[in-house]
Length: 541
Image 1: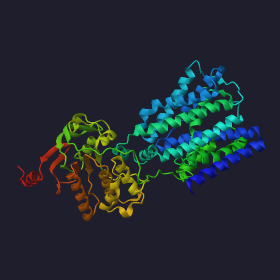
Image 2: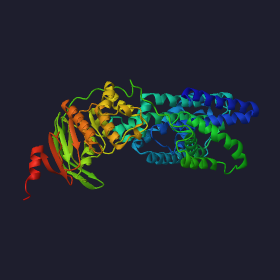
Image 3: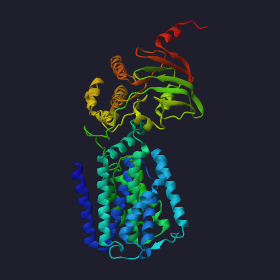
């Protein structure tokens, strides 16, 4: 089914059911529709965070901020409710700012951060004299008096706008960047896409929309109590509804609400007034066990052939200079005073046994491991902090184990990198050179290890780097494929790229300009391949 048809169908069902409920039960029907729309807004705004690879356990933080802001502004008739709605949205967006540092966390850790934040805001709001634990009684107005038709219409507009906004977000470069982060954060950083820079927008929009929902809730109920609007149930509710419908689909929040909310209100609440909310817990358990993706499959943002991410500037060649680099991992020194330089157009082969520090060296150069001592220079300039910042200057890397974007096709994986460098015309040629043309429409998550290795190389070559870090690019390849990959690496060297090529074992290969042999994190040998062969053949003293 086409997405446009699904959108019209689901919203047609929802609005038709609302009309029937209002026509048959009048005031109760209006309340049912109003809170159903409110639940849809909450669930959809929660899903925005899932689209960026985040998981919120504390959405009540934004809901409570919006409700309290609205109540405080309109109480006493000081501010029009319509004006206060805008202020509540702004307050929700501002409330998201303290969570910006947490955007670098993994989903589970971010969830705990949001949970802690909601508890913190609840405590702070309860201690503010203007809010207190007793809360507010809101004045009645014609448009905002319980489930008045204008308020219900406002909720309907907000609910439809939130689903449309989710859809438009997925179709924009920001939505595709968020999808890349969700699939593989480290690969995304290696393309110069900053996690915080791309995640702040969906989080801020989600917080603002949730705050408006809280503001409308204040008028629906006519009162606001701090303990209620920051209640954990208001964090669990959007989570369950969003996951039930399908958090990675724009209509997931709506479908989850249509399936569970009427069942709860019309059947469970009258029958089990004290325990009806357990339906949400049971639904969550069933989802995790039998259908974790939800009722609707994920909407994966597709990358058009002509436009993926904003077009970048081709990277100019520069030398890589590493000086006295010392790095620790888990308190253990994995690199000790490593010094070398690689000029444009040179290949440095890094050799050593397992645990010698080869991969740690690449991680430090790429900005994934901090240096305890020493320095890394790109040309004459100190390397910036962070993997994304270094990638934007022109550093690219492959991974020892392939890390593609599994939901995107092989071609889309290469197109993402190519667009970052303004190099989309090279995509098909790279696929052909690496014998990936026949696989171009296959999801990258379904590739073998050897195919994934070739895709890794295609991606970094499409990025047109100035410095290229290769972590065992020939491992798992057939002799024929290894020969082809070696030829491509030699070809990119000739264009002026500085290459650091890590391989396991003592064999220097045929393409090295110079060798660096590591042992226990220290340099055992640095020099030419001829000098290395002579040193290996020399009798031990």
